[in-house]
Amino acid sequence: MLGSFMNANDSNLADGVLRNSITSLETVVEAIPVSQILVNGSFLDQSQFSISNGLPQLSSGLGLWEWRVQPVWSDLQRDVARVRQARAGCVPMDPDGSCLFYYPLYGGDFSDLGPNDLALVITDEDEAQGEFGVFKYPGLSLSPHGLRVSTNKVYCLPNRAVPREQVSSTGIGFPSSLNSAFCLEFQVWLSLDSFFYLRWLADADLGLSPSDPYQDVFLRHNKLFSRWADGEGNAGSAESSHPVQEERWVSIAVQKNPGSNQVRIFHDGVLRLTAEADTPVTNLDMLQFVTDGEVVVRELSLRSVAPLPVVPFTPGPVSYASSIGDTQKRWNSYMLG
Image (tube, rainbow, N blue to C red; front, side, top):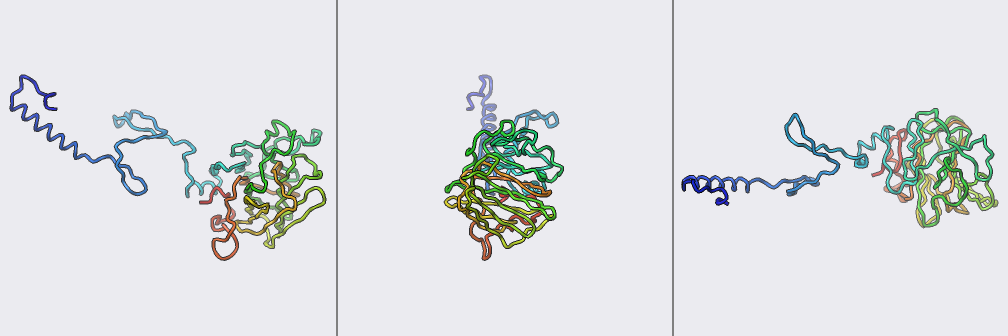
């Protein structure tokens, strides 16, 4: 290495001084520790680094190049702060790959954050309805807290671009056969002396004709029950003994696990009801929201998994109520750890 620095006119003394200086420099360089990175509480040797979502830029104040890192929205993780913001109605949770639809219903907005971009619609009473109905957007909600549902039925029609394109077929909704799973969730505010039910049907036409099975979850003061029928005279219901309070937010989850046609209905995080229809709904082709008064719905979600417990964590009922905590804040199963 010294030969590359030597000059023919240099003296042996100068060469010796240069040799000693280079030797000292090599010693200093060898003593420099390897760069490290902190991983799971421990430092690991890492001589090279890679930065994603970053751009090099010249800092005029520091006189050096620096990285300007800009995380993308999907880099935001589900942590305590993110859940806190979602529960306060500031930033909704980002749904995962199990999402079929998710309507946070913030500030009267009806956007679906799921991959299918479905719309909530009502019938257009200015048009002849025909077999499948003619639908339109429900207009602006007068409630900043969610979707205000009054005497008009509100519909969700899976795997369709309604109302941009009107319904023309049935049986193309989300699967709910024996080996399928789903978890349907919502929060609802019941006004005094009102009722609300959410019904799922296997046929997207407006009328209940033979072989059109349906099932629903029905709420009213002091009542929570599920009803079912198949359009051919076979019907039934199951009722919870736990009362439903009015003028407060109530969290409802309806879960079907794979391998069974039974649905489990959770009220504020506690399993209150199990129901199995005589003729199961094997295709979620239409969902209806019906009330006789003024109710508000928010955190409406449908997932293709069964994330809620089916056995108790501790002696007592099956429950995840401790994860919900304050039932008057927003909640959905994406907030579970």
